[in-house]
Length: 304
View: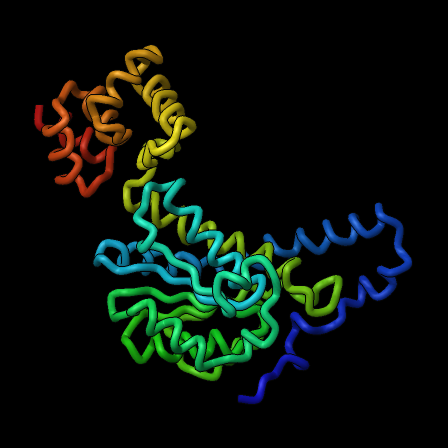
């Protein structure tokens, strides 16, 4: 496959940084911050596409499917990072959001040269994940047509998964058909081709929006608190206690007892404490409300 790397914006030279090798440290930082401010505007410009991606993610999760990120280099690392942060933040099963990086786990720590150029490896990675029509696959490719991502999205599309390309160029032509493109145009980097800079920042912003907003819609948050966390460590058990102290106005010891009675399930403990239900009753009410705490509590108040 012939790539267009030399003709795309993220590989171009930034006129503002041609003399960066002679700048002082304050001048370099001023230049970087000025360029970084452009990222926010670029991401804002594709808001409708981000909203549509979030809606599709929610649909995917409610249908029992998974969100799978695919990328190479920085793009792949950021996808894996976002996926890895979902279980501790939202209490998700690790299979719900997953990340694939060209070159495999080794590429998370060091560059695996040539891995991004292997379209067949991208195809095989999707096959290994057993992607199907209920899944959502988001390919992240700053340079638009990274072969590993191309192969992955082609295979995902053939398997009837919904496919999205996240890229950072004004001309998002892609060698294979995808269902949606998100392309905030972040412009040339201050170091030509170093997409760990503005493109990387934009990637993190977009992925944060997709998983955070979709998980809120899935009931993983109550008010603005992480209530679907898994209390699997002393730190997380302590966070669970503090959440109950905050929401229920009880003391730390009372929160500990309530959490134990709720089998260390914070959401269940909230419903138990708010409307004086047993563990089984609270679980049933949450299930009927689709796991959304506010809906479970509103159902109670509406039944009076």
